Every structure is written in structure tokens, then in C-alpha cells.
Length: 308
Image 1: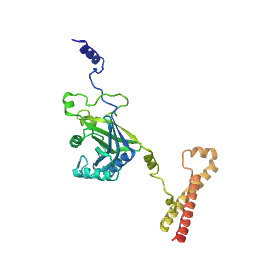
Image 2: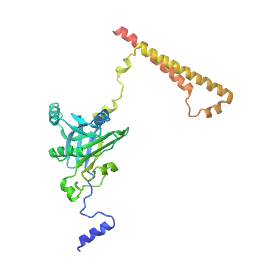
Image 3: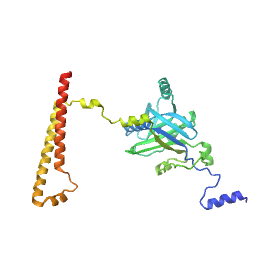
Image 4: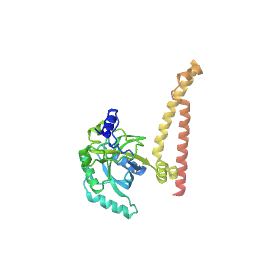
């Protein structure tokens, strides 16, 4: 028994990995732009309850870094549990048209959605990923769950297949580079569906450039033309009726509050109504809202009469 084997067995006895065992590469990562993420989410939500799919545009920086700049959807046949492309020529034509407009990014993989059942690859997805990796071994498959994704948290993951040679020898398919950062903890469903046996997960990071930050800031910002829009007379009349009705209810509640204050005293009434709606304050807000809307409507009609 040589010293090297003895040290390996000693390390395994203490729960340490032997020196030859590769540690999963946590430095490999995919950077997805804000534009690509928003488009994937909108596409996935529009397809609920069916799966949707599309292609990823970007570039492969090096062996450990992939950037995704944009995505686009493609013709497909889908159900609630699977999705497949039906036009293999579409990808080539789309990339050629994008190159004509100055978009020189290449297709670096594909994405699809899993509505409500997490991020993993089914047998159909694995076959699809194999076809992409035959063209480019660095291709990735991104899976997004539009139902489990809520504001501030996106349920998304990126995968790549484990080579057949690594499956047979049960070796780690990625090179060991560093342990900075960690892969997200895999779910039980993903492990049962073949994660770390047929495919492995890649870290995902999101990045916004200056133009994307401006785009996101202006996404829900009203333009100056919003102030010139006029509602119809019927809409204004209905809003006025609703506002006056709300004001009448608030006035009744305020009158009841005054009566209680005169009977029980100011301090006791304040304690009793702590955490409840203040009818006086809301009544003032409703009055201001009614005046503003009617003044804007009158001025808008006057300008429209003079201008048109």
C-alpha cells in the first residue's frame, strides 16, 4: 500500500474528497441582460398554461462565461408538459435578418418555460439540447417558471448536458477553477429528473447596462402627452357620481366620529380609532381629486375647441 492511496483513504475517512476528485466548477456562469430576461418572462406568461420556447442570442466569452443579450420566440408545437420546434430553418433565417440590421450576435442556446413545476430538463428537453450541442458544444438550455416567479424573484436556471464519457466514468464534467460563489441548491424534483446525472446547472447573473437602466426607468413613466388626454363627458359624469357617493359615505363616517368624540371625549375616541381609516383626511383627498379632474377636463376641452 503506497502513501498516496493511504492519504486518499485517510481523507475519505474524515469526510474529505480525495485530491484527484474534481470539485464542481462554480466559476462557470451565464450573464443575462435585463432585456432578455423581460422578454423571456413576458413570452412565458403569455403562453400559460402551455410551454413556450425561443432562442438565445449572445456570445461565448471564454470557456467559463456566456453572455445573453437578447432572445426571440420561434414556431413551435406545445402542450402543458412539453414543447418542440417545428421549423428548423427559422433559426438560420432569423439570425441572417438580424445580421442585416447590425445585430451580429450568434445563437448560443435556447430557452423554454415550465409553468408551475420548476426548472429541470425532461427527456424531450434533453433530446432538444443534444441537437443544439451537436452544433455548438457550449450551447445552454435556460428554463424559466413564469408562475413561481414573483416580483423581485425569478425562478430560472441554465443547464448543459453531461458528456457520455463522463456519465460512464462518473467524473465531474467541468474543470475545477475556483469555489467562489455557489450553485443554487437543487430541488428534489430536479434531482429526480436527472440533474447532476444527465445534465448540470450553471450559475446565472443578471446585468443592466446604462441604456437598459434608462429603459427600465421609463417603462411605466407617463409622457407629457398624458396630461393633454381628455376623457369623454360620459366617463367624467360617471366618475363624478362615484366620487360624490364616496364623499357622502365619508361625510357620514366623519359625522359619526364627531358624535363619538362629543360623547366619549377626544382621547378615548383617538384610542378607539387607532389603525382605522381617517374619514376627515380621506374626505379632503376626495374633494381635491374631484376638483382636479373637473378642472383638467374643462381646460382640456377649452384647448381642444380652440386648437381643433
